[in-house]
Image 1 (cartoon, rainbow, N blue to C red):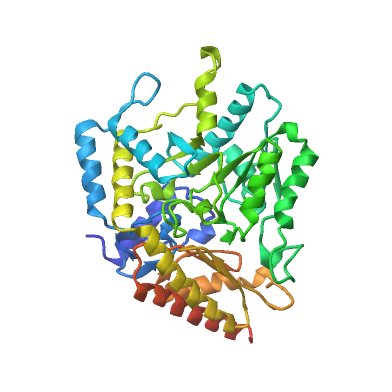
Image 2 (cartoon, rainbow, N blue to C red):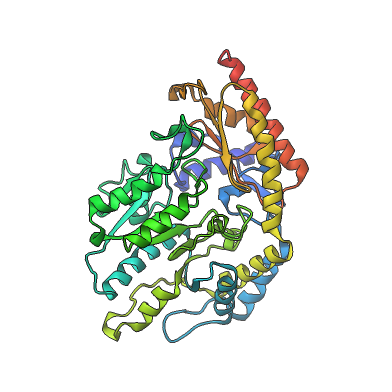
Length: 455
């Protein structure tokens, strides 16, 4: 058993010597938390500290930690058939059954799945599929993509180019040509309607303006998260995605819904666009499909796109491929994971626990530095500001968000921040008492930091 300070120090040294972590800088990794155990909505570290998992690790442990039935399914499948190629000419039972289940649960127009291993790979697949579609339709010049600022679509080259946050570009540019961005419905920072009582939907109309600027005969697709995740937990307001769908249809532009975070009950619906009665042409998914117990992702495409893929001559076939495009073990686990979500009605639970979380967080408006509380279902963010009425933001050098984050850890809540926004997306099995603890810990943490600022 590893439990002495010396053993922990040695593990930390080995980690720093041999692992390059995501979003890595050594100064930020001097004292990493070494997690060793999870149960439900709780995480435990190597030193025995317990935390509420405030972000489902990375928005992905939807059914919670420690679900032994998933381990059992994976072990059984590994003993029977751990891996088989899903290339043309072969297939496997778990991939077939999971694809059929997803077709039953997803938007009515999406009935075909291409499997991947991650969200970034899923979005890469979506971009390639959109280009394939337009070439097969005799419009090969439709190759451009429009995304949104504050979007996060992954960090492979094309996904990074769609991602709308400059820090992800800085040291890896030049970006892939053909990607551009419009402003999202980010009310706190909106140039159109932040001072108005409701969204004017000018942010949606900006898509049509950009399509015209680029030339609609050159734009393949628009990609958007129903709730922007890593960029701020920014939901689309009522009417926004209905307008987006109309604009895409009017201009013959495909709509890609990135549901890597919002899919699989996270927002209180199985898939988030159902909140607004909108269907995409392509949907990318990952994370919650296996609750992160094994890597799996994919895209689902409309019947129209599937018909086009099936209609091309052999010399123009869909030459997109990956080794792990439907591995039996991952698909078997994914199928059981989705069945658990159905059996435990986690869409309804996410809606109910989300309402409780948002109600508690909205009470934080009584604190003067709380500028915005937003989200949908079990997705939430609290953004801190220097002056709410004037929409003045803190000097980044003050590290206000980081300081609140450190206070939350002291109170047993582990989550993530971006700038001065604190994010929450706990496992869907979180209890009422744990939701209330998140709210209480957030209030106390903000109060501590606010006092140091003289607020």
